Image (cartoon, rainbow, N blue to C red; front, side, top):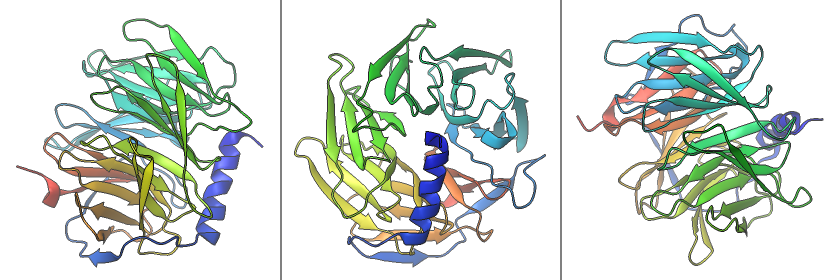
Length: 339
């Protein structure tokens, strides 16, 4: 079984056997804040399409559609979608991010490549990873436009240097490490990854190559997505723990907040400029919100039942957007925008 298949299996197992591991209370909230947008030429009814998203400086939403082998762009102002098929068949576009020049980057987990899309010329280029069968998965771009990504099969962290096609790989220990999603801390440039199969977070110092590991406490833990808050603290979704977690990297202390819904499968996570945490709850079909310093997680249900919120991102105006994996839709929360 490949690591990708094993990861899918973890989702199924987690959804069936999740246990609450403590944390603070949650509260439901009304659904009126969430609006959905239909993606044209979408998935067949009953088929799941995994979708990540990133938002450019103009507020346009860019997203991957893994099973459809394409990336898409949605302009909210014009309410127009544009869809682009990736040159390599069945490339498996997964994670996506945008550099300071507006160039779109994404991982191709099946083709073992990093994809690049120029939105001006509307052309693709693709760069294979140095290690064959590496399965690049999570992706994030640092302040210098270096493209960082995880290699799930190779169990490595890698970086494609800005302005070149040079890829440098940093080895992890396959016997004790795994490599899932990734983010880069603003200011410090530290690279953080989740290790879903090992129940750990890991931090890479790009200057020294030193890797520091943080075991996630709890009977069962599967950290999936990761984000760094304005204060430098690290937030992550924990699928098996049915919770989100916070790590103070200076002290190594953790704090946890449980989902309201049993087997919610907390998936994508992000933190906005105010320090508010947002999490997509895949099987609960809700968006969770934890205000900065808050003691209660607020949850909002999607208008479409069982829509499958997948990944979440913040637009330049502060509006929260997210993808829905079980239906052919994007969704946003107008009540969060600072207009």
